[in-house]
Amino acid sequence: MTWILTQSGQQFDLLRPTASMIKPVDIAHALSRLCRFNGHTRAHYSVAQHSLIVASLVPVEHQLVALLHDATEAYIGDMTRPLKAVMPEYQYVENQIWLAVCERFDIQIDLPACVKEADMVALATERRDLMPEHPGEWDCLRGIEPMTDAIVPLPAEYASAAYFSRLMDLMQSNHRRRYAA
Image (cartoon, rainbow, N blue to C red):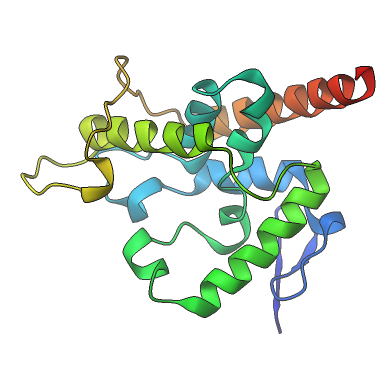
């Protein structure tokens, strides 16, 4: 068996994902229940809220891809960066799902530099606001300044509703922008 059952009742094939298997409601639901940092935060802080923050930090034309930059995690979870780096099979599966997400939402495959930068700003802010105190340096955060505002974790239900609402708004805006051009 290579499939999972999603919250909406969708049978999602992890090894052969298609755009038609990708459901906005499943992404919002699952990401709002996935805790960043493998749950090692002071309070539950969801991937959905992280994605909302990343989307808020980029220009409007990149907000949809920013909101969806971690959408694969709705289907395969939020694996820690160090472990993901040594698991090529996981990376392959994640990439196949990402291609299906990109097709479903008509977004570019390669993340724009501004999305990658916003992701790092969010990470620096999350470390400051949500992680235990520790003197160790995170190499990936060298030179990255966190946001001024502090992150206040949202309950899963709020994060899910906010993510879904923002996704619907951005899908509609992108559709209008493409057909107006």
